Length: 153
Image (cartoon, rainbow, N blue to C red; front, side, top):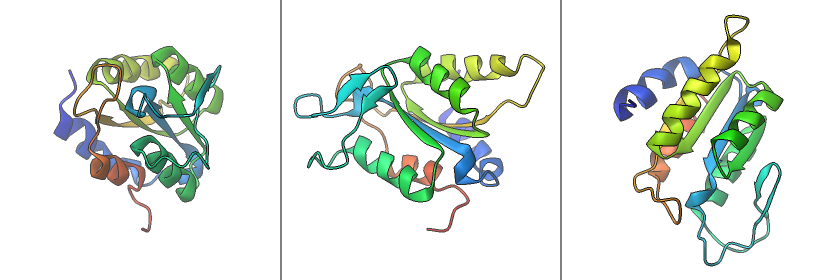
């Protein structure tokens, strides 16, 4: 089971040494404002528009990671999509923002990827404050702290 303080804070120190170009951000699509979000889903996740005109947490977190030079961002509709993104991009570090259930399953799946043959990416998790699969909430300050870990602000 994920313990918020140990899962996030314990790993941030080690995560700080990973260059942004070797990090990915995984966001759960359920944080988007469902009634007014103009983004469309594709095989690679929710395609957030740079000029959508809506100020939402998904857009702000996505922009923060892009501005820091992250290797990629996936706004996933589920764990399988996020795992495929990780497999395809082979990051050294992952910031994952989702509900506790998805985070637990995802950390286990990422750990199993190496299967004794390689290095497992370091994962920093930020659990949602309120889940429910639609219009969920996250501590944005905590999420930004994880995205910016070890980087000059």
